Length: 447
Image (cartoon, rainbow, N blue to C red; front, side, top):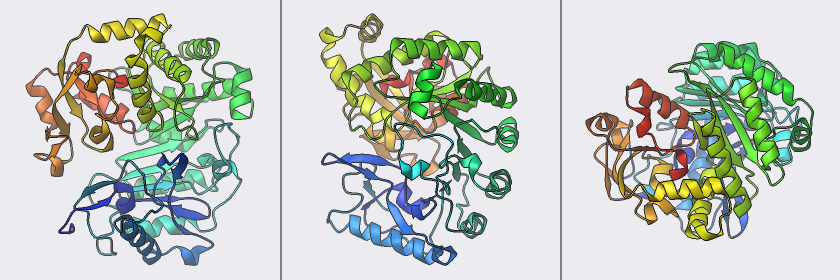
């Protein structure tokens, strides 16, 4: 049961667990506070199987929850995902897992410049992964809201990955089953679950040319990665001409965002016939802010991907809040912009006038969407309503606006902004499946 009073917490603290090789974590969120990066908050150290108990996990979560609400500075102080509401009590009876991320190895076949030894340190799990997942299965959410993530390190290098992936994808029956692989090693298990539309695969490429790929990712192999993604794509589930369960990611650095790299990357996408996939544009999580150069080039990248027929392109949760702040600053001083692509985009936006829009998603992104947002600050957009699939939110108010059931979008013709990075591709596809005109979906730059 919820507490009788509103307190400060987040979904991850109450409902998530991230299995690293030598510790468990509450979340994978990163944020900056007083100029320092925080996040990846630890639940407890794991030295052996004896440390893996529900009692230990719950006690640590309870202690952090109490710290957050004590008013004293703590590991989560400054996190933008904390908010006040009536949260459920943290105890064994109420423990309800909605997300498990298996990051149990930091063995990796790459050593990317933007990464850290937390993810390529070569550590193997100090515990039995199978026994741990068997234990956690008992506390899986009974609703249709459970998510699995398989990451690392390189998840396909986890011992017995193929067997573990298939066994627990079957037993947990996740609504969303996400694999984050560099795709140097091909997995038949991933192929099988992609073909059944029971998994999504995200692969970061981060370069257009072989030389830049080697520089950024630490190894050769850009052609092999593209070929493996193409092979995965040939098996992956497709609908309405889209392959939403293959996500190609590009993590932007100052080095890999030149015109040559982006244009060559786009030529590769066309050559390997991957335009029907989803695309994420991301940024280095060690950078608190994006430079004006990065913001301009990332927006140009976005526009160029759309110009070759890519329908699903968006900024991930690392880059999205930074882009929102950066776009606000950039468009406030439009006279400084030299890019013809961005000047054309800006003028097209201004010609629209004020539009009422529907925000699909009343979660963290939807809640924060008006913060530092040029398009809402300049009244280019006005939120008419939120819509969400969570029945518990219907009739509530967010930012002073009512949250309605998603059926509301068929009762009108308002443009739609998808307020989600993690579920952008899924929501986009659902809009199409509901036979809603895709022209109503506004580009994600407006978030």
